[in-house]
Length: 240
Length: 146
Image (tube, rainbow over all chains, first blue to last red; front, side, top):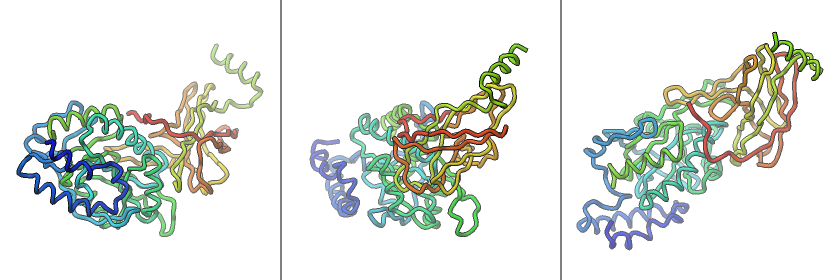
């Protein structure tokens, strides 16, 4: 990153801004203008905006496939509309300016989701230390819109880390995104109005690039130290 | 034979008609505000020569209490309701994150670390036991291992 860029763009990447989602779209417009202006000086672009070189992704060999599996070719997250406690939010715009770890679940989940969100809350500070230039974002998509509303999801994820972003949407929008990402889930059969049912769901974290492409999968069990190492390797060999 | 004798002595001393599993390490993870479900985790140790089983759990202040097992098949997490959770003779069964658990559904109020919940466990031998289970914050490191 050039000195010019880090100075100019620094104010946009203040982590405190992450909680103010309302200004995100305004920030995106400014960011787009700035990157266009900077583009000629630094063709590689900022790490939080840079496109991944497909050849480098294809050539990447993970040290441990049980911790991180590259997705090559990458898979684009389709355009879809969701809701967070801060209002409407859409893919792929939501991924801009950030590297995102994306996880699906539901707040009714007593065991695995809290375990996985706890692991993410352990991983995030490690990543912020080992890859300090990267602006990390944790997105939890509830696949249970019948019981989960944005407020409930926000209360749930903020318990684990106040910077986590919880979203949900209509069944159609959820499927539009989860199917191409192969993030499977299955709602247990239950009578209409029955409020007690389980949802089987994929437990992997999905690494989404700023351009809205899934480039790696981190399957469970999730060990924060091992994931930290794997992501450092991935960024060194594919992104940086 | 020796084992049988020791077992008999133990039973005589404890004065129990049957040896229900010995429970230890019971805890309930504190859940986020508004969470509709939580879990009880614990260790069950069977000191007898016969298989034992947890067949029912109950706790006041919840809509429903069920026995469950989390399993992972091809990266997909599933929860399967259990009729009973077995403890082999002289064996141990752990209810732990990512595996067996007692699911507490629909709490009347949020569970906060430091509180306790009276949980009554019923076993296949007809005995039951009520424990005051502490609510604790989850440790940072997950204990899920395949």
